[in-house]
Image (cartoon, rainbow, N blue to C red; front, side, top):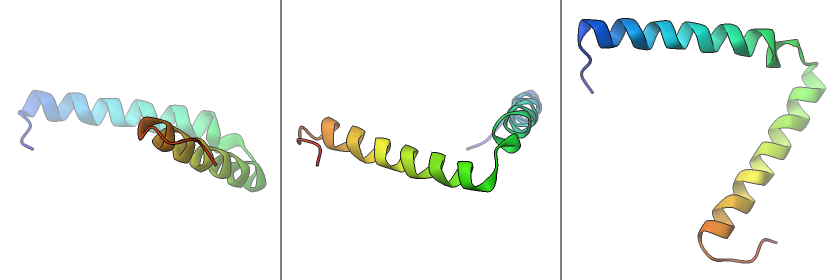
Length: 58
């Protein structure tokens, strides 16, 4: 992918905003809470993939 100078500037600004938001939100969670969140998101992802494939969730 090739970005123009302006596109690169916008992408970098957006990434900085996202990093700041994550730091102020998820970055405040305890490591055990982050692990639990990760476990749940992975489980949700697997259920969504199964549903998208027309399969019954396990």
